[in-house]
Length: 117
Image 1 (cartoon, rainbow, N blue to C red):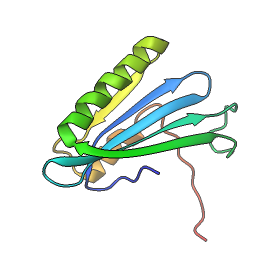
Image 2 (cartoon, one colour):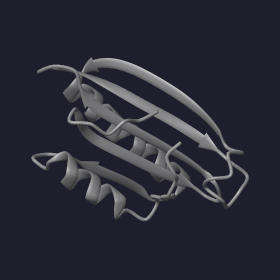
Image 3 (spheres, rainbow, N blue to C red):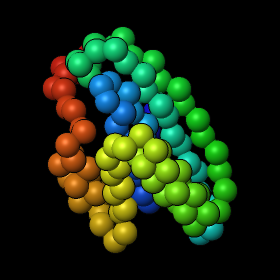
């Protein structure tokens, strides 16, 4: 799972029509190291909340700048190779609330109201 917290640096999303996608985030561990979490999602449904999708999750650590640079190259190559759109959202000096607001405005984000247990 990708959790949004104060360590988030950059997030990427690549959509592969009609139903598959890739998402990644780099989060800061300390002044020089970061954690890259990414996943592929495979689905055969138009409904984002039907629970019939399959997700493959991966995580690794390394120098933050290197993780960001390489993920930029990877997502750009994915998007160009598949001739699809790629989104990158860099946090920069934004607060977590500002970053989340920018993220929620992107066209691939789906939300669902749920009742607490």
